[in-house]
Length: 158
Image (cartoon, rainbow, N blue to C red; front, top):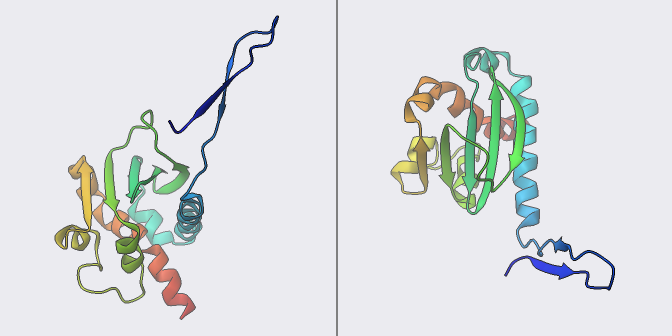
């Protein structure tokens, strides 16, 4: 059982469970991934042509990297919230699911064939897209360029 439940059983005190959080094994990786998306948020705000492309995009998107779920909330092209999951209460319009190694290759300044595009990840079997595909296709250029923002950051540094 991942959560330990402790009970206070002293006489005269209410019996109320207290939850203790389990040890988080992948906390550093999840924290780094959240930090990457916050960096992408700042980079998006500094890219006017991308904000223009996404001005009609106001949706929740799930990006799942391995077992880590990250919920991105866009409002008129601006990334307003980056929330770590998992959450059964957070609705999403479409989801991009991949593994960490594939995403790291996708974010390389010059990615290998098959890792240059989100649909390339699907073709090589390293990604999956679920949900409302029509919503993704309507905003495809915006979402593809948004997901490639860490790549641009590395190109600028080089």
